[in-house]
Image (cartoon, rainbow, N blue to C red):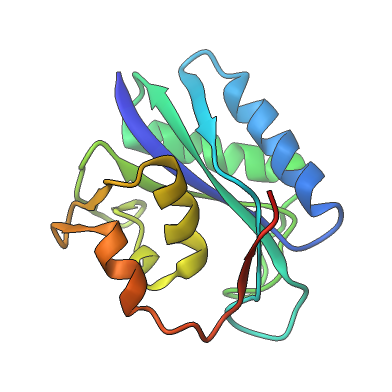
Length: 160
């Protein structure tokens, strides 16, 4: 079994329900065991003007390779009703594979760790809530050391 972390976000419709439905679908898979969910965070969006996001992260265990986890995430986005739009645009749900057991991958379809995660407060806060001692496998730096270096230009509010 490998340990993986998935970031979830939604800024359209019933945001919490979209995330909860995604979690239900993901944890309903036989190859994925949901271990823990971080709190919800309301987040000012990056990119064009749009509604605020609700974000969280989960820790899972799986026997599947990273590519299969990513495929499962994309299938769930479609089942919830996500339609691809402009980059960093609004969406019903977004599932991002953030980290998988220290893997570093860089191919056309999958990059691990997730690109720019170290620059996103709304990604780091829930990850650190789940695992305070996580290390960025590419930078070889604890995530908790990256967080204070981020400018607080986008608001992130812990909801629960």
